[in-house]
Image (cartoon, rainbow, N blue to C red; front, side, top):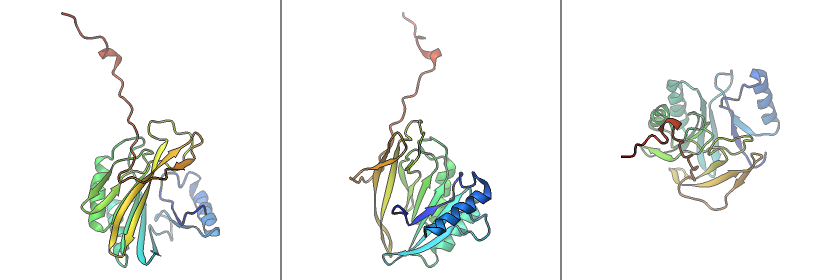
Length: 216
């Protein structure tokens, strides 16, 4: 399983091959014993996965286009019997360098419902971290493995490391991930307190504004 213990299937490509393709993916994950949390819209699927790690009772929640009321209920339900709740949100705007208002509002709602950390994906670029109350919000960790990405910032990602105790998250750090031309990751050995952010492209001036100044 390449060192992975759990994969989230709540994303906008999960049904690229229809429900049959999704079920085939789930079956193959089950064959190799790789846990997954997927789309609750399918019968029998639960957006909450529970696991005990180092004596810490964790609840991992994965959402994509989950109605807010149901998402809040998921987190409240996950909080019962869990020391730490981590919510994975597949949200945001492709290639945007900042979260949009909807994400900020929803992050606050999920934090108040009991999330200890919220980890986002989908924009393909790393976003700055933030806090909603005492809840860590990593709005987007960018890419990890993704070929053929040519937009600015898409060859950079981040890994988020969390220090967990039964009383909650007591520390966190990031490792930068650099993708090569094939879209394969190269993970930095050193850690940083904040995520390494992509360099933003310099905006181009409209041609109509060039050379319009007058000489007196």
